[in-house]
Amino acid sequence: MTTFSFKSVLAGLCMAVAFTGASAAEVGGIRFTDTANVAGKELKLNGAGLRTKFFIKVYAAGLYLAEKSSNVAQIQKMEGPRRVQLVMMRELSSEDFGKAFMDGLNANTSDQERSALMGQTMQMGKVFAMVQTLKKGDVLFLDWIPGTGTVTSLNGRKIGETIPDIAFYNALLRIWIGDKPADSSLKPQLLGLK
Image: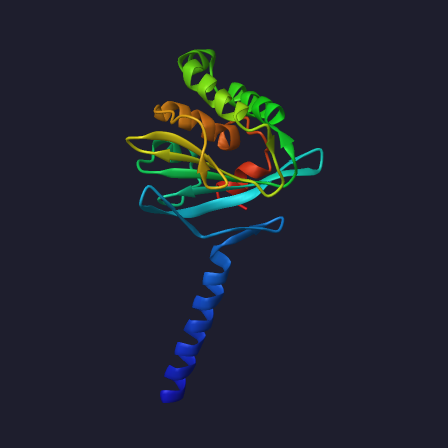
């Protein structure tokens, strides 16, 4: 009986170690931690994947939420902080990144939404204008902080103004997980489906 208990404990420990090792994700050589602290709250890595364009790796992306979910509508309604983490895998001008951002936003919002979010979208445009080039290895955080708004930081330094409207952050999320995502293979990875 002692041998059985010892084997059971050993097997349990091995499984726990294996599970812990698998809880973080590595995408294209970029490692995403299994948790992130945003505004004093611990978020879980919901999923991570690669954004590619014409077979070229552009960035690795990770989505952090309070609770894991593969339901886009549920994610949009979640209370508490959220984070999109982008790690650049190639150099990209802020002009190119801004254009891709606008294309993704326009593809996933109605005319009415775009009109309502025009001021916030222009604010985000100013954020991109502050950084001439995103370099390989740069880390961009797009955080939703309740009571504060969308906070953008590059390599740990806040850039631009905070954008207060939750509707803007949800529109931002739809660039990657909306009906017409920037990369159709990235969406299911961020939703934890692959």
